[in-house]
Amino acid sequence: MSSISGVTSSSASTGSTVSSTSDVAQTQPVVSVKSTSSADAAGGSVIDVSNLVSELVAATEDPQETLISNQTEQVTSQISALGTLKGALSTFQAALGSLDTPSSFQLESANSSDTSAFTATASGNAPAGTYSVAVSQLATAQQLLSGPLGSGAIGTGTLSLSLGGSSFSVAIGSSDDTLSDIASAINSASGNPGITATVLEGSSGPQLLLSSSLTGSDNTIQVSETDSGDALAALTYSSTNTANYTQESGAQDAKFTISGVDFTSASNTVTSAMSGVTLTLLGTTPAASTSGSGASSTPAATLTIANDTTAIASNVQSFVTAYNTLQSTLTQLGGYDTSTDTAGPMMDDAALEGIQNQIQQALYSIVDTGSTTYNSLASIGITTNSTGALSLNTSTLTAALDSNFSAVSQLFSGSSGIASSLNTDINDALGAQGSITTEGQTLTAQENSLTQQSNQLQTQMAALSASLTQQYASLNTLLSSLQSTSSYLTQAFATLPQVQSTQDA
Image 1 (cartoon, helix red, strand yellow):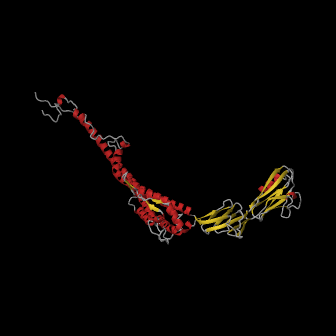
Image 2 (cartoon, helix red, strand yellow; image 1 turned 90 degrees about the horizontal axis):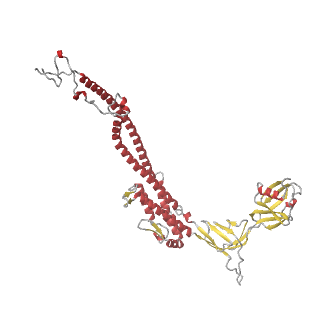
Image 3 (cartoon, helix red, strand yellow; image 1 turned 90 degrees about the vertical axis):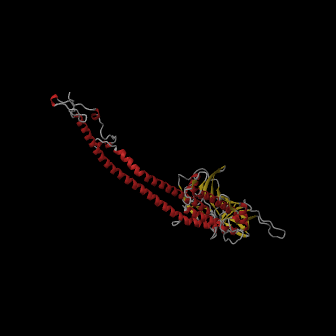
């Protein structure tokens, strides 16, 4: 008898017995990676294909996507910062508009010594100086009051009314022939140049008041019938037919003198007497008295025209304020915050540093103003503090304007003036070929390229995912087949007859 690998055999005559050993019959499948995904359809899957592919794709994609994302975030931040810079420069440039041309300094004030008689305003071309003004008569509008006309029907027909050189007609019918109806028809008539009709209910009965809105001796009211009848005759009026109305106010021109020169005006707002000066006549001035020799004494009122230094000083202060706002923005964009240990988004940026240098050169330049006294910002009271901000000494500026207005104007608005130079520099930087515009185009191109790279990466990862899914699905099928074969063989081995060996007695 012999013993063979744990399988015991006996003589055929005694039959055979089969016994399963626990080491073989209970052996687990050779491959035991179990899937819980839809990949189970690959023939009893043993690999979680979906999770495996996701992890492999993520391991390939994540480093590249992180790099692209970080670069995109940086470029986006720079584009945003560049937009902030452009906005700040544009805002500052707007403040330069009140200082960068000679016409910006052609601001003049006109002052009246008697504002009850007249007020005045002046534009840039008004002749500076002091002038005597005497107002003897204001321009007035005509006003006519009819006699009592009764509360009943006045009559029918057609009225023709005129004011100055304009006229219009009003048809009066039997259904609207009371005085109130006629007044309403006049007021609503098409082409009415400015006649207002009002019914006054006096103690003697209703009366018609015709008022002109136009002053001046030429703007008189005329009323006539045009139907060859006389039903409306009580309402007619002309320079030769005045019986029906009392003139409450006559149409007259204003009369006044400027430095002894006589003027008349149909309006109390006078723009043609002096170039660049608008006079508003409000009342008459007392007659000028005479001295014992017969000479006229001091005129009743004076008009003073001078450079408007108050407005100019306000514009200069606005320039200082605007620059300080710009400087704060530039510092935030390109500086370094030690308190937060954070650099600005445009730190060491060439475009930012370039425009900063140009602005600084303009601010601290010496300008040929024709004056050796007032030829820099410091000379008119604008200085820089320790933070780089500007400050204005208004007393120094006022003294400079009073002493040499032309030099101050040239300092800002001359061909090499500070405001005009700054305006040119900003226009160049923001122009089509400017440094800021060019940098913006470059950043936009980089942003578009990164977007394209991200899209390409997504496409590549989708392809990789599909390829890996196919490969591992095939492997899954193979492993599943092997598992089935292993299981079959295990069961087959388990059913083999067990040969028991016996030893000779």
